[in-house]
Amino acid sequence: VQLQASGGGWVQPGESLSLSCTASGSTFHGYTVAWFRQVPEKEREFVAVFRWTGTTLYADSVKGRFTISRNSAKDAVNLQMNSLKPEDTAVYYCAASRTVIASSTSSPDAYSTWGQGTQVTVSS
Image (cartoon, rainbow, N blue to C red; front, side):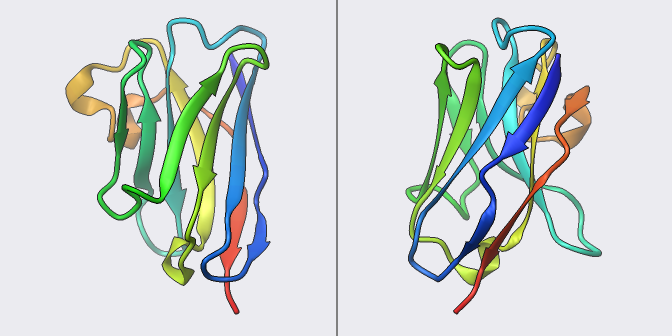
């Protein structure tokens, strides 16, 4: 499967943005799909995951503000980001794998396929 991340942009603090990760070459059926983010000179940080079982997990920093969901009709996994903060500014990446075990879903090393990243900037 190949991944395409889209939806990034610039917003002011408190506003919302929706990211989309779409699949090509295959479908997301049976895949665990996650969102990570990265700022310069820092390691890639886990944001949220939609497991192939349908369960979700969020980083504490985004819990209650971000929602990850799957759109089967469009073969996409979306990340709805509300109440954005300046510290949410980063390049956001989606990643997918068919072989992620539950205890590793927040680790970048668990994912074999990555999208190209989309920039999210939260600033006044």
